[in-house]
Length: 282
Length: 322
Image (tube, rainbow over all chains, first blue to last red; front, top):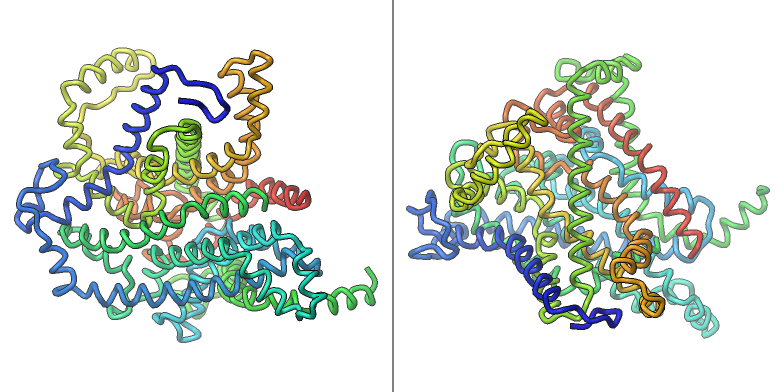
């Protein structure tokens, strides 16, 4: 085994490295496997002290119940709707704002960028109470509109920085050439820069989507109506104080997590470059 | 800058304002306005009985927060929470990145599996771990019971040393994770460490890949040992990459409501398991002490701002370079 800098690892080192990696990986993956296992348990085996990964008499009954006897499909639909709207809003607003921060030296630019980082220091609960009171006054409390606006705004600062960091790496000369060829400012951005920024757009989309798909607290405060429940509030309901419905909860958790996990893994290659660009090169 | 120059700058950058306007409009509505509104509430006596007929009371709420011993207790716990979490995130993350930054069979598989915790929605992580910490049916205690013959002598051995020196006794498994304050706090910590190390690992891997290989070659020519190379090349060059990530990590962890709240089911037992954000939430949505909670929120923000000013300066410095 050669190390990246060309040195060879002695054999005992290689064994040691593998041992450490395997142990850490098993511990890391275990909770996920465990949930999948519990979701496959038959109804009479939910309270068991068994540690088997795949339970005896494994069944998909919890999944059937989830979709047919619980309003899970409703929650799924609600969450999908909210998350997609937030993604579209997040990507379109962050891609334009990030571009302005990257290319123009306008008055208020520095202030704007610092304001964006400062928002990262706000404790969520600080904005939640005024937001809650405000949405009540505006009569958009307990609506998706309120939720979508809240999610977009909280995801935007990070997305804008991310986009700006990526635009900074695209040479300005391309835009100058396009301008000479007669493109307007908007066309230059739209036809030349935006396609080049595709990897950053993908990351921004993923980030906005995950932010909305996984958010519990804001939804718990701003949504009251049963029919508007999103997945996090719905799943939390399966874990009530007295009787946790482990089968339903686990099946729900699997259905909710698998799509985002796959998405995340598919895009993780860009995530690395995007994040390091966004957070390090600022 | 003269007025004419100002106008000139505005004219030239008109399109830039158009680009940022929609984003800042929304953020103004959801972030900026609530921020100022929160300041107003923090200076008022607003609560359930004074919801509409509230009046200004000056800094009384701030004084109330700062004169309550519970505040310092929770603050201390928050600092402990943040330090322990970030310490483990960074050490585990960097260690794994160092192991993975070499041609290794199955490297991509390990990397993929190790970032999984980051991909799982946080609330699901928290609720799932809460299940695993169940006293009777949770996986943690069941595994501890399996290893009891091995663990018990180790714990006894440690106690023989710890008891006289620190006056500390370690209990034997199974542990009451969720029904004791220490247990619940430890449970939340373990959960949060699990979900947080992949971020640091990914950042560190990115940093390691950007270190020029020639440096190692030169070091080897000069006869530097591996350990020296790690200390003199890898770690110093990793530092500028890790510092912004660590700053972000501190802020995120300090403000991480989900894990502590969902693992402890709202601060159980007996409101002992709180960090500042969950404590505020309890004051607002369970006790309806709006003015008090708003003042507390402002104090949390100021604490983070003091910490964050350095971070902002640094980010601006890197910004200026590029």
